[in-house]
Length: 405
Image (tube, rainbow, N blue to C red):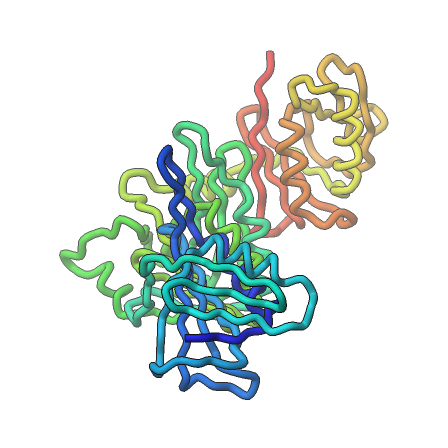
């Protein structure tokens, strides 16, 4: 078979799915997973033939459509399997700005030609491809930009790599309040953000609470709340993958499904049967927080003060000492008060000196509009610090305080 495509469009499609192409290395060989290209003669549009590219790395499956201006094949439908990393790399290299069609000819291998360049790419084994069914638990449709903003802010703070830490992101569907919420799971810094979402409930959801129903390893249901956890390193690609105006979201037993325009992403759910993310405990802690100190401060002023702190601190422990200056401003100091920076802000209630990790503070403050005042709630020495964009906001970030002698 032979496919003719615009190189820029094909490269864009490959760039979208590339993060789901796995490459496994050992002492003997490097193994690439395949990309599946699916072409059907019957899907001819005004601009060309609709074709699909699919990649699956065991944790996520990404599918994106591209248009072929011409196809030559005997079958009405054909799937081909090409070594994924090389196909992605070559399509990117041939996307050199020259408006020359690119052809993919598939026989014993895939021959890619554009202008005077041609490269042979080996074929691969048929990859695993998940085909979504109607067996979903919940379904909703939301604005894509609002969704990607939600994940950018709420899914940033997971902590992979450390022993006993959770590298997951928790997605919570609140069916009573019609909220779609995202929470990170790092114990030192945490984000929780939500958006409005109307839910359609699947038949399987009713069976979860039925008599004799076995609990699912990947879904955690508590009354009207349905929670699922996904690997944070995987789901962070979502913000760049979805491009349509709206995104359909479906919760399945083993994965989360996102469809926006002609793009579909599936993220495998984590088994939480032994260790579930204690979101209820987090919410209880936020609701019972004493909030005895309230600060209204502009994020840009905090970030500027932290820049001075970093220079003055000279790579020592990144602990920033924060207290109320006699002038009424917020004072950020290094250990030993070798340097200080005053930040103009409104301070209400009781506020005593506290110590925070400056790197974590910077990461969290970056979640807010630089020129619009945010709210910082402080409490007793054993309570964390809560940051919100407004006093009564349901979205929040949490920063753990540092105990120093």
